Structure formats: C-alpha cells, structure tokens
Amino acid sequence: MSNENETRIAALRQAIALSPENHALRLMLAELLQTDGQIAAAVTEFDVLLQANSLDKGHLIPVGLLALQMDNLDVAERCLQTAVRVGLIEGIASLRTEIEARRAAQGFFRIAQPVGDAAPAMSNLDTLVDTAVIRFADVGSLEEVKKVIHKLIILPLLRPEVYQKYGRRSGGGVLMYGPPGCGKTMLARATAGECQLPFVNIRIEDILDPYLGVSERNLHAAFEYGRANAPCVLFIDELDAIAFARRKYTGSTGRALVDQILQELDAIGAENNNVLILAATNAPWDIDDALLRPGRFDRRLFVPPPDQPARQRILEIMVRDIPTSRLDLKQLSANTPLFSGADLRALVDAAVDQVIDEALVSENDPPLTMHHLQSALTAQRPTTLEWLDRAQNYVEFANQDKRYEEVEKFLRSKEFRKIVKPN
Ligand code: ADP
Image (cartoon, rainbow, N blue to C red; front, side, top):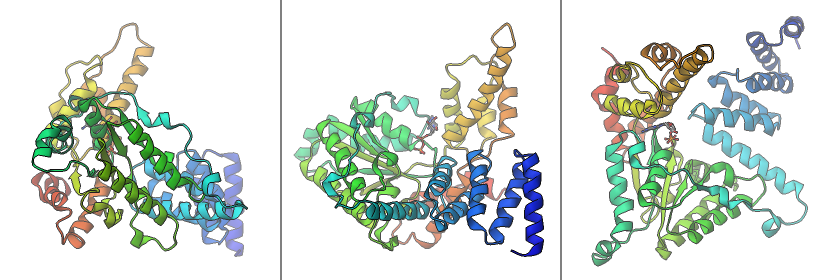
C-alpha cells in the first residue's frame, strides 16, 4: 500500500465510523481499497452498500465479478439478484453462469460420495402452481401478441379436431422475448386463464441448485409435475438462464442443463399430452440454438414496450379500482415514452404511496390526482432503454436470418426514433 493511499484509507474509515450512513464516502473507500489491491476489504465495503440498496446499477456486475475473484459467492449472488431485480441485462448471464460453475465445483468437492440420486431434488412442487387467475383483458393492449398466442396455443387446444384433420401437430413451445417488465409473464398467466387451465410456473430460483446434477433433476421434476397436471400451461421464466448457449460455456457445467431441457421438450412433443409450453426471456441471443429448432421453441414472439395507446390502456387498468379525480391518462401516457408496464406500475405505486400518506393524516379519503402522478414521474425513468440499446447491436450484427425482424421494425418505428433522436 502506498503511503498516500494508506493515509486516505485511514481518513475515510474514520469519517465513516462517525457517519456510517454516508454512502458516498463508503463508495470512495471501496473504490480506493480496490485500486490499492485490497480486494477482500473492497468487497466488504461494496457489500454494505449493496445491502443498504445504495450500490448503483453500474457497479452491480463488476462488484459481482470482484466478489467471485475472492470466492465470495454470497456477495456475488446478492449482486446478481439485485441486478436481475433492477432490470440489468448486460453481464447477467455470464455472472450467473460463473456463480453456478463455482457453486457446482464447490458442491462437487464438498460432497464425498457421488451425488446422483442422493442429492435432494426440488421438494415442494405444489408451489409451482400459480393460483391467481388473470385473463387477456387484465393485460393492457399487446393485441397482436394475444392474437398469435390465441392461434398458436388456445385454438389447437379448443379445436384439436381441425388440426388433426389436416395433420398439423400442435406441440412445440412459444418463446416470448423483449425488454423486462413488458408483460411476458402476465401474458403466459393470462393464457392459462383464457384456457381455464392450471398455470405451472417454473421459476429459475426453483430450478438452479449449486449441487451437481440437482438442477437437472429439479427441471425433470418440474416437467413431470406438468405432465401429471396436464392439460396445463407450463411456463419457463428466464429461459436464457436454463438454456444458456452451449457455445458460450467454457466448462461442462450448465451444458447438462441444456441437454436436460432439450430432452424434456422432445418428450413433451412426442407425447402430445396437452402440456402447453410457454417461455420468456430478456436475452434471446443467449439461448442455445438447439432450443430454437422445430418442435422446440420454433415460434418466437417479440413483446415490445407499450406504445402510447397501450400505455394509456395499461394505466387505465392500473387505476380502475382506486379512488381517482380528473386523471388525464392520455396526457400521462404521452409523457411516459418507452416506459414498460412494470415502469408504469412503479409510477402508479409511487403516486398511490403519496395518497396513502395524505389519507393517514386526513379525515376524508383523498383521491389519486394528476398532481401525485406528475410528481412521481419526476423520479421515474424507462428501464427498457438499456435492453433496446443492446438489441440494436444484435439487429445490426446478428440478424442475418431475420431472427430479430420484429425488433428491427420497432427500432425503425417513428415512435422509437422520435424519442431516441428527437430531431
Ligand atoms: P416480464 O415478464 O415481461 O418481465 P411481467 O409480465 O412480469 O413482465 O410484468 C411486470 C409487471 O408489470 C406486471 O406484474 C404488471 O404489474 C405490469 N405490466 C407489464 N405489462 C403490463 C400490461 N400489458 N398490462 C398491465 N400491466 C402490465
């Protein structure tokens, strides 16, 4: 450690001891420790910020990687979870893969006997069934996507004889992709609601397990559960995490999971047993090509950020059950370009929080007004921009087979260009 760094680090530590909530000072300390090569100590300080929700987006992946350098998987995992929660795209898949690989390696060395059947598989399968029923009408707009789902999933279920007569197999899954928070999960849940079928929701945290072979067994158990509950809609969220492109792996960890999901999809396809498969991803470019072949996820749907009328419709749905006064949702929707449904949800929630604060100190029930929404809007930014920025690269450099044609159309649309390049 240089003398100068030593003095600054000591001074910063002293200042933080007096004012532990001063996050700006702690960030300076963490960065200085890192520059000085004191990585473990830097990770500890970054983690304090992370746990106080004060580590900004840009630091999450680098700090996750730094923590991995120190074999601190807990901090790396926390960085990953926060990054997923705030809608980060770049770097998520590789951080997750690296954490998985480390955990698997640890598990492998920690367990003396062969893991195989002895390893615990997912135990409470009933938590996979989501009981909250929603319908297409609860999902604002997205009419085009709903139409395609109706044709691809719902009609073959309701009118199987027509499809059989013409030798058209149903089967195969539908993969929805697009920026986070734009309604993919909602659409999947609403598809089950429209068909009046159980909704089996395979979440990534239910599947991935640090112990060798357990993730594959969990995945198998989840598909078995789907089969046992057929007919049903089986939904795989964050497909990229399960089916991360094999070409991007350096080790063998994770490849087994890709092979497992291929086997499961092929088995469901062959059985034709009315397990309707939907999946979603924010990172379609990370998905192994083998999953996109016929009979697997050969139908892909872009779920775009809502346009202005769609945002208005989504806002109308969001405020329909609360007391309001003279809302101009057309104006609000015009002032929220590129906001995802989740961004609009956050906006409405923040505005409603203000109303609740007022209600707590007032005799009567104050309604939600434009004033609340406008004031909440000053603190909200659209989270879809980062995704669209990333997608732009794929459209430019990896769209030879027109895989991202719909995204390309969106990026060329007047509405998008008006926002990104207003003049
Ligand atoms: P995704 O799966 O695309 O990441 P979700 O379907 O989980 O997004 O949406 C996140 C939240 O955003 C939903 O729970 C809902 O509150 C809101 N939301 C997103 N899209 C819509 C929509 N089209 N209509 C109504 N609410 C929406």
